[in-house]
Figure (cartoon, helix red, strand yellow):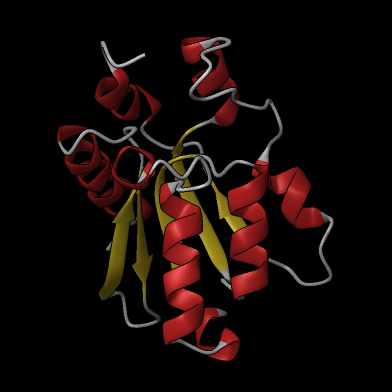
Length: 154
């Protein structure tokens, strides 16, 4: 599976999240062998939890299911760049690689000061570089495609 394929899968999860009444974000966990192990969309609409970002929810589930050693060989692919909270969750879960579609900057430019998503202009690379172990980051990828799931939402 290419990184672009992974982002497109995460985008499909974002579409499902939106259709279910949640914010349009999706994340998938890809194992060392390239198999999709789990997925999560944003859960804010379902639960009212403002921290229910797709990546944070996925990393919580992954850290309960797998060891940090295993997750170091895994990739989290997401439809949009992880925010500071989600990048932190990926770091603490032990993920080895992050691949994202839409950049946090483009998302902020799109949404503006929307009260449901006060997007930060803080690249996940900046957050992850502050840690004590390396996490490879790839992105942005397919930004035009990833913008489509937000059309008319905000």
